[in-house]
Length: 109
Length: 114
Image 1 (tube, rainbow over the protein chains, first blue to last red):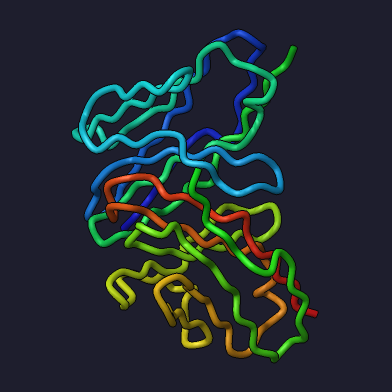
Image 2: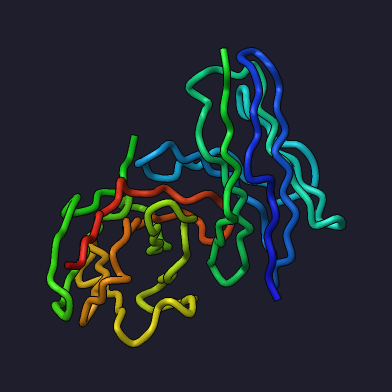
């Protein structure tokens, strides 16, 4: 079967660092993507891990461990505009990316 | 920056009517997708399309749904006989190298079935 778990809510203050974890069980797993979605908006691609290890893109980094079926998104120097929902989405080799329930990040002043 | 364009932004239809949602993916992308998001819920995969055929579909994508790439630029989702529960935001997405990279999403079509 397939499963995907990430925390439902995370709260942090401006300037802090926050880590959003994701565990998955996905047939035909190919890589792990992360998306951001603001209320009423479309998902926006943030990062992709095809190999184990850390990928860094500005303030955002993402990590993957295939052996643990685990990944995380790290957001540094949090800003108010980072308040949004964040989704991990395993990609399969059949060309399908399934979104999790998402983590609502609230950044407070 | 290249965009995925969806039209219309909002469509209201009567239950039982057919609707066609339209998308223009990024021009050099090869893989195309439809997702939907019911208000307050997560983004749900519907279908992926590559090389003029469906490569993967979810259990949501039943016989009432179909996709088509009628020409070199458009990608459409047809719902044959809409139900109230089809009311949702429908997102089109495309990607350049299949499963390897992230998807670029359009801004969505909000479908309201009355």
